[in-house]
Length: 82
Image (cartoon, rainbow, N blue to C red; front, side, top):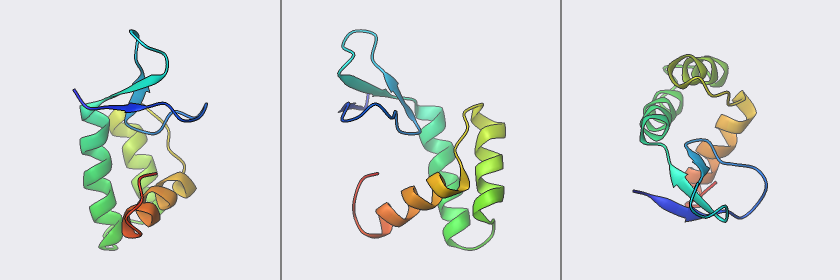
């Protein structure tokens, strides 16, 4: 299972707080797969940020604003993790 350290009070899209250790985040594979698919479609200008955000909410049940999606895509372009 993919894990990462919890760095702030905001839980990144695709992760949840671990039940074993509240300082660790566990990956949610379904959300990360959907995010990966949408990032590609938005980057290729097939979908707008707003459309991508709405699609993610529909597929995963978790909200991500269009600004949040842009932040994730921009961070990936710069080689940073959001």
